[in-house]
Image 1 (tube, rainbow, N blue to C red):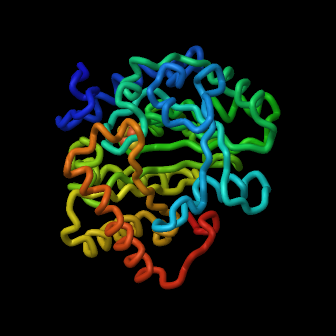
Image 2: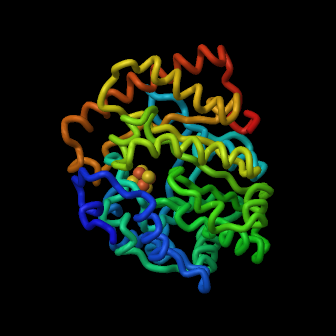
Length: 338
Ligand code: SF4
């Protein structure tokens, strides 16, 4: 059984990731109807943070990805550059994407912009992927991008396959699809066939964000409430993705930390781990700046407030170590070999 505490703001228990993942998946997918449980923003407090009103009957929203969102933080080319490249478009400083958000996640990052109430799949509604695609194509001229986010979309890895298939069925060949994965489960292998993984890997308009949560076991557990040893699982899954699929993947890093002790050597270890997956993988990584969204404020106790400040030192340590390993290298992220 799922612990109710896991779903409450301020929970401090360690999450049983595998048990919760399995229960959430049951709630979040109907394979015969090819439907996924989505958050409806008309019924979510998250709507207070939205710049534009929800679309797609409340199940969708528009998000602007910006290359240079902050003066004091590295640029973020994801998913802007892969999407523009795949769609044959020229350079742009931002990208407006259609978002659909699955209604469950197995972790509870204190900095998550989603209210925890919208991560237990209790408030979600099963929506046919065919309907999502119809709403998407009605709302946007091609070419455009779609982000299948969460929650943890990869609790239901069929979602991305079904979305791409529905686009194909409609001849919509100028839509780029991007999805997120928090690197917590092996569901990509457990629930997709070899053919489905090959389909994702061979698709010219699909890209994937894999999220590394922290830079060591301590910061990982502090950020996610998952068991510290699952930090190692994140790299094992990344390695499996690299070796057994051709999926075009990139890595987001959230490097919020309660302490800056030994930051330089810890970042060195992070780079070592990434380079074991692929020698150039650090150049496909983008640190994400954590912000104080509406749902985040009540979760901020002194350690989290300190972590918001410490992320500046952490990103400086990341940049310094990156420069040591790849002096002067600033390639377009799409050109970095995978
Ligand atoms: S893994 Fe992602 S969706 Fe889940 S709690 Fe963390 S930030 Fe939110």
